[in-house]
Image (cartoon, rainbow, N blue to C red; front, side, top):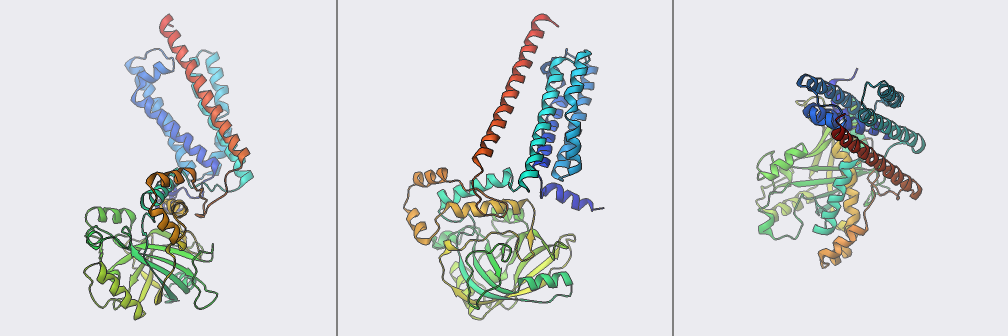
Length: 480
């Protein structure tokens, strides 16, 4: 039996949710909303459904119905988010019976027609949606749509990167270094295998989270900002290979930021001046860089938090501004300073971070910044998970696709007007798949089918609303 904390995590993340399960979840949200309306406004709900005005005691019974409908909706929401296939199948057996039962109750004059019609349409419509989604899952395989929140975030950050900034929204640029990685062979077998997976070469981009390089020093030094490290772990085909493009499954892109071990802590820290969380804006080597998302490692047997920490002797001095910060980094690279990759079990907040691998700086390299972009998805047996991971998987490729792909293109767009950038953004909206890469456009025949289903559903809803309103007017005029 899984722990309650594990079930809550699965409920929040809804990882691997099928189309059918998502339709059940959305139907549950509809039922919960309906139940809430009936619970709060029983008299209004009764008039809408053509029920004679209830007494105070009758209104309380209607509220009880609203409570039961809302509870049923919660059951649908939880089962859908947990991807409970058995419940989804049971709903396909249950909901088609509702119109039949409603027809019998209406024929026996137990329920008024508008109420019977409303429940019949909602339940049978939900059944048709789930049935279509089930067949689509069986035909097309796993559901790869990242969901509304990731897609909305992708659209927003694509606008910011391509129109407003002409650069990455966060971590806009930085300095790039080549390094080597060796396992530290921790005593835990699972962590030892994870450390071995990281062994090989690494490409590091180190910079600030918000400010572009080249911004006025007086401005960059006064705005709260957080240093960040983006690392690509890979197995080189030659000792000096520089891997600018991630190879799916073979490479791991790890993103880590100083100033907070969770994203909300980092944002709160920066919003309040950047004085908490051990944040040192002007010293790369006095920070702890957290990945902010949990990782499944060792073939899913371990769930850990990852962070990157500088060795205690990596920094010789204490920089006091942006210029001396960059000088200290140059000096550390010349001395081949090292960083540690550490892991902590997600199930124990007070558990120690265990060093699993060591990164050694080899040299700084000069590359086209726009040719290098990171996709924080699964690789080398490290699988990030959670809502932030799904958002990142959509946002990062969308941001990359919306801005200039080369240094020359980025420089040319600096001279463009905002209207030209906006026009390009509106005419080119990238699609994002589950792995954070552009996906082909949807099959036109399938897209047309989707539009037909939505139009039919809206038409059915409109006809039902008209019938209910006419029934209400007739009742009010004739007093029956």
